[in-house]
Image 1 (cartoon, rainbow, N blue to C red):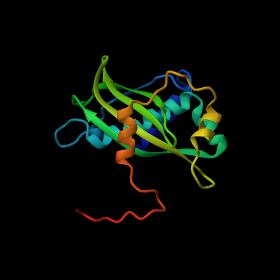
Image 2 (tube, one colour):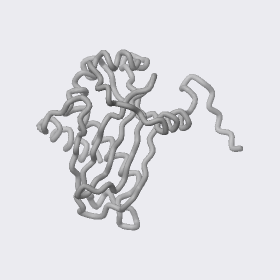
Image 3 (cartoon, one colour):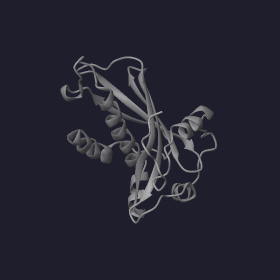
Image 4 (tube, one colour):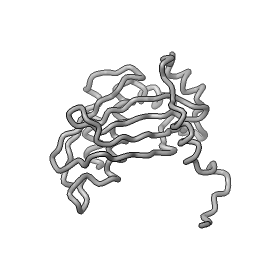
Length: 180
């Protein structure tokens, strides 16, 4: 995965530029190292490739440069993925990534694994941004750095509920592992 990440970081630098809220399309091919024992792409690999797709989106839209200059970096708070069809060895696919919108603490991203225009898997990510100096980047700071947000960006209600329902306690709060 590190080689693929490095390769796509180079490709992103020379790829077509995007607006902050455009759909990013990142092309991949299923490699032998992506397969599980059933010879289709391993479910965990989808999430790693989704990371690369989000980085490509951030880099080609110029957002990565803005955040790097401010000493900010992204982290995933929650993610969920649904599978429809399997990806197999050598198969070409595209990861389509787009920002859905924001709540009071996080940004929501949708990503689709697409083959010839057909969705094979779909993921939703709730992300936060942290400061290298410590602390979190507020949504107000984030939006100030990005500029005008399109009015059509809306986070579906079910995704807001999912984000809240899937959340663990804050890092400074107790989170004992107690099985009920």
